[in-house]
Image 1 (spheres, rainbow, N blue to C red):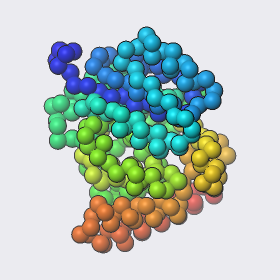
Image 2: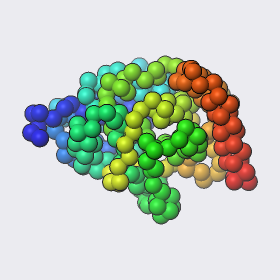
Image 3: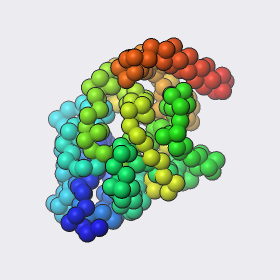
Image 4: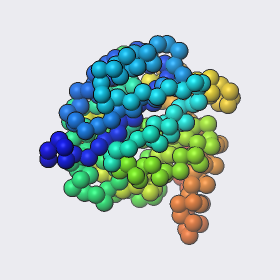
Length: 287
């Protein structure tokens, strides 16, 4: 496929105070062997100078678009701004501290062009810790399961167990992703679980065997917006996973089930049972 014929891919990089990783991330994205792409950096009112680095790079990088916010608006809103600005046929989010293989976009576009019925293409993930060393989770041969073959219960439990944190960084059909009702999913303090559950229910996902993403596991640091919302600190000591906000997430999942499956009320009962079972299991295993 010739370069001129390749569809536009939007690479979305929402960030806040990422000076530690910004230079490496820009180099990594420029190393991706796919020419027809736009890279959108949205600066969520960073105060560590990371925005200046991106702005300086924009001068020499023609396909880089830089957006800056006048105040901190929260990670969710920053994601939404990036998505609304995108124009690509295909869209991918790229966290500032993760890394993509140079062939990531090419492989994803090749698959989605040949299989347009799929809404999302997701490769396997390699895990590293905050310092960039191989994480113990990777040694356990953690594999992203073929969710397209999962039952409703398995999809829900897979989402609750926190195995889906890296799914936003897949390659999506742009129009399909832009139609996701992000405003509704952002009503809870943490919108990631409802967002992923919505994708699991409404998107046709293909999971590849190729390990083309390096995902950095780390402890979440609350932002000013988080503190204003009075989110309880549920992060265990030395835990690489973000806090799970039980009550608001249950309410949001139930609401989503009602919206996605209005003619199947029995799924509400099943959802409650699966969520409570997942919470009980997580609490029991952590003690």
